[in-house]
Image (cartoon, rainbow, N blue to C red; front, side, top):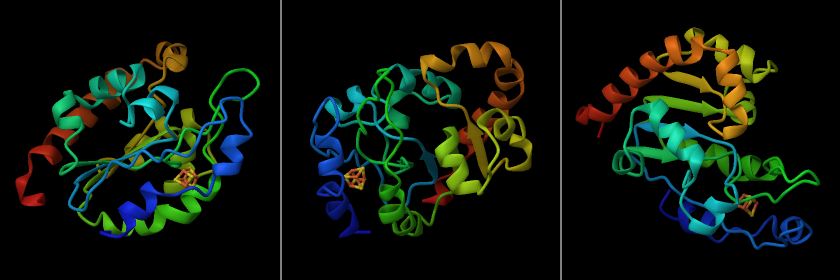
Length: 199
Ligand code: SF4
């Protein structure tokens, strides 16, 4: 893990791919984990704001995710307890409609397994969105079906929709998510974050 973090921070595998996007940006891996973390947030990929701030979930999605988890900013960004490991560490660019492109699969292929092997104290994993859910659960099901089946994975794993504003209609259509899943998730996160035996 000691040499893996600087190698990841310097990664430029997707330089040509990003140069060909509308923003023509350089790779900027947002690296936010340390050995010893007990809560793993397996997310999708940084958006433009996160790319610029170099801090994961430094946007409206982060506000909503912290509310879902019951964590304030200090706890959420405490790398000794929380690891944030997306399916791609760099902003992938925009598609023709202005939505974020999917995470480049080469990133998870290259980095994910050694990173997760190094995070051997993780006791609870939050899977945000379809890419992380497919990779971690090996499921072919869509996000709604996977999240609806959350009891099959809890309390070690909680699949969640992406906390983006784009999913506000999804939240309205699926009130069980806030009424049933979130209270159990918050209790589990609190338990794991406060368990200093996990250090
Ligand atoms: S997305 Fe991943 S593989 Fe691509 S440049 Fe960034 S760190 Fe490297």
